[in-house]
Amino acid sequence: MASAFEYWIGSRYVRSRSSNRFVSLISAISMLGIAIAVLVLILVLSVVNGFERELRERLLTMTSHADIEGMDGRLTDADAYVAAVLQNPRVAAAAPYVRGQALFVFGERLSGAELRGVDPAQESTVSNIVDVMTAGELTSLAAGKFNIVMGVELANELAVDIGDKVTVTLAEGRVTPAGVVPRTKRFTVSGLYRVGMYEFDRRLAYINLSDAQRLYRHRNTVTGIRLAVTEIYEAPTIVREVALQHDPMVLVGDWTRRNVNLFRSIQITKSILFVILLLVVAVAAFNIVSTLVMVVKDKQSDIAILRTVGARPSSVVRIFMTQGVVIGVLGTLAGAVLGILLAANLEAVVGFVESVFGIKFLAADVYFISDLPSELRAGDVVMISSIALLLAFASTLYPAWMAAQTAPAEALRYE
Image (cartoon, rainbow, N blue to C red):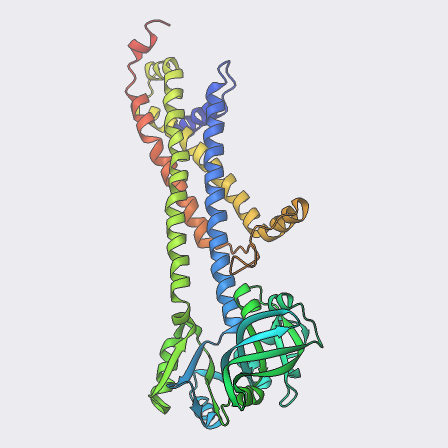
């Protein structure tokens, strides 16, 4: 009965209908502040999680889990090496490649990019390039046809389309009676892809492996071998294990090492944003202190009457703690629900805003990812809500203690 009595009074103070509606107004403002702070924190962390997920997935679309290269950029007997590597049960697939830099020329337009020679059938086993093709097919890269597949941003830069012929110029020259001249070769654009990361869409093109060997004079050698492993987070261990088993004198790399600074910066940014926005939640929660202090001042006579009819100081403490907790719980629930709804539909909301106002939040030529992704994680929502409730509860302690110290005689002297 005592608990129900204290909760009833505390909840009535939140929705007070007395002539002094100022108390209800500041209670609503405190509740709104907590809701907005929780909403923003859930939304920001979801966006950071989405960026991390999209970055990882798009990186792994174009880059292998791990790679092995020759010490001098040349690896001999690639087919035998691939067969030996595939004997490891933790290696799912392997594909040789030739890599080099080139200058692409079409009409009066030119652009530099990486040129990668691959075997279409083997490449599809170590990357997801086939899934991001927007025009043409990767299988069009047949040996001897000198076809090329490039990213849409590179194609836009050169103003080329399917069927156009692009001149590829290498920095390595050839000696002629007229002197050293750059080596060039014309390729036909047979496919376009779009990953959604400017770094790949603008800086990478594919040709057939044998065409690349002829172009870069690799003869029977390749630059290296790309691996797909069964456990992507174990890629550093697996690639070292494979190299030590077959040829220790090689260079090894993996997707975590190549992008370690990028993912580390994302984690640091996420931690900093969490701390900063948690301070916003704390400010909103501690607004409850000022709210309850004003309520205590406004309800001095009510507290005195309760004390004179037998209410104990602990009951007064629970009344005002109930009011603060109700504000905190309602504000946190509202913020969590709105945050979940907005984070779950963020891409649609952003797309709508961009189409209505004709703006672009993330320019493709500035950011790695041109879309605004979101990944809602239950753990983040639970953690944010728990911290908000804890701060709201802590904010009730001092005002409730102050209310319990009210002397009935002093409060009723001038009533």
